[in-house]
Structures are given as C-alpha cells and as structure tokens.
Length: 173
Image (cartoon, rainbow, N blue to C red; front, top):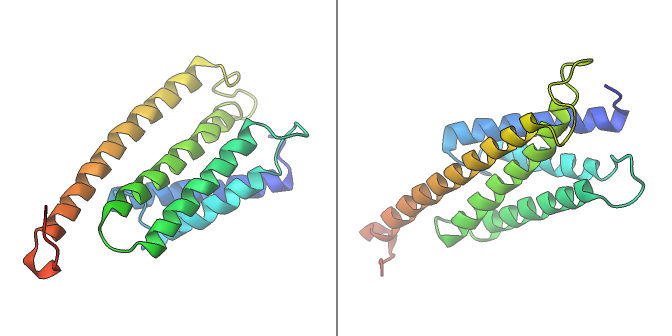
C-alpha cells in the first residue's frame, strides 16, 4: 500500500476512532464524551488529525491539512462545551453537532483513501473523482443530515423533560 510508519500509525489510530464513534452512535445516538467510546473517539481523532499534518506528498499546506485542523477545532469546541457547560441545555445541541460533523468530515478522506487502496492491486475506485466515491460520500452526507436531525430532536426532548420537571428547579417559557 505504500504507507510510511507515520501513515500506518495514523491509519490504525483513525480506524480505532471510527470504530469508537460507531459504537457511541449505536449505543447513545450521539458521540458521548462521558462514555469510554466517546473519549476514545475524542483522543484518537485528535491524534489522527494531528498526524495527518505530517502526511502529504505536497510540501506545502493542502486541503487535507485544513480539514485536519478544522476537525481539531470542532472536537476541541465540543470538548469545551462538554467540560465547561455541563447539564442538558443549549450547549448539548452544539456539542452533539460538532462531534457528529467532525466524524462526517473524518469519513471524507477515509472513504477516498480506502476505496483507492483496497483491495490491494485492484482498488474499488480509480481516484477521488470516481463515481463510487461520489455516491458513497453523498450517502454519508444524507446519513449525517438525518442523524443530526434525529440528535436535535432527541436533545430537544431531553431538555424539554428537564425544564418541565418540577424537581429540576427550571421552568419552561
């Protein structure tokens, strides 16, 4: 496959982050930073994004570097909201969205790299412009949008149940 040691490390850590995200999404319908799978996603995505900065056949900044930095910003903002704005409130909407969006963005290069390398010798796609990659990314976009809507609705129900609970001390407007 022609991967450097950094490329192999980056790939292994990235695959673990993706598996953790899927595990968290399947259990909690969100990437939950309170749970082990959410923590693994956060830290392994951070490492994967930072190691991506050292991977490039081009000697200058490229779109992959910008994407990696944007993912770092998204997960850092989500972690800040998680740590500094606890409770079920408006911050959870942003936290959920930032983590889900970072996961979606992580899948963009993952799909491209996987489809153009696997199976070895006869990859599924010929390059980034291949229709299979475009169709797969479109499907992932639709799933991301649908998932974000479902997360928003679920968080709205959670927030509403808390603000309408007389024991919570909150009153709904």
